Image 1 (cartoon, helix red, strand yellow):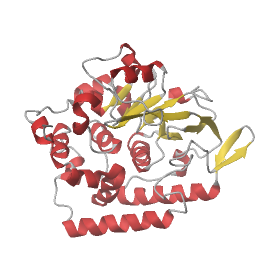
Image 2 (spheres, rainbow, N blue to C red; image 1 turned 135 degrees about the vertical axis):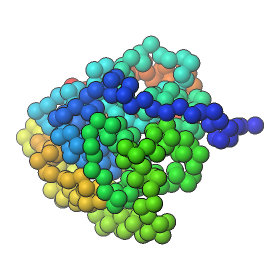
Image 3 (cartoon, rainbow, N blue to C red; image 1 turned 60 degrees about the vertical axis):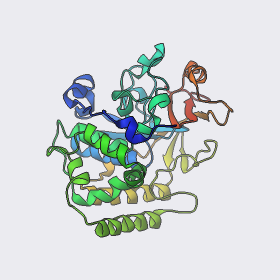
Image 4 (tube, rainbow, N blue to C red; image 1 turned 90 degrees about the vertical axis):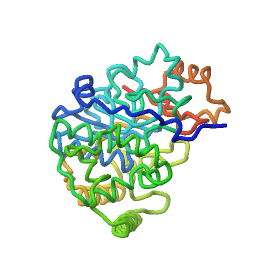
Length: 341
């Protein structure tokens, strides 16, 4: 009989050591870095947080199918937020399930030496711990880390976007035992943590919270257009084969389509209004971009089962990034037809 999550969590009372994290990854709280973010609400919130708290600059977007970045910079010199990059020397922060079996760590795992991944930090793997994986967004983890070093303004109205992103509100009540365990791990109950306002304080009644979420969804939907949700920066078609969208040629480079940019900025301004983290256009690069197209694959597409051998085969293909998205699937990105650099 399969053990329950409650049984799996029995006796797991570890708590994160933020000082150790900052010692190992000091760049995460340094001033003035360039970054590339995922083009969904999680990545956009991370961009707003870091531009406000540490004067970072958002230089582009990466969604696993394409990378668009300021044509003057090398992506490898940027910090990637809301994804883990499988390349030595490339800094990244993410929350995805990466390792298949912690009892058989591949020799190439050192390529993640500069990736701050919360599941890896807690030694979670797909084979033993998939039901215990991190249940929130990168923004929640990043916010907790940055606040240990730098004071972060936090408005109570931030509750709506922070519960919206990555389906956090669903996980709180669908995977309650695991969420409570991770909140304890993140020390979210401590007074110095901004997560305390979100998860522990009586900021909202349930009815008021529902109304706040409902208003947020309605505004998001007003920004949406056919085939493109308002909470994303669309650079490729969702669910497609990586078809590039919203790009306007500018010589050898590309600019973001004016209407698509207006939608993205409207959503960013909504996030800024709710969080108190200002959106300033000059802190975000919307072109000229260099466009890099990649190939995204998954195990289901290639009819492979998830096991040690197929995981090793995937790593041998030198993916740029990957994640275990269900207990029977990995999604991964290959550098073709374009290369990372």
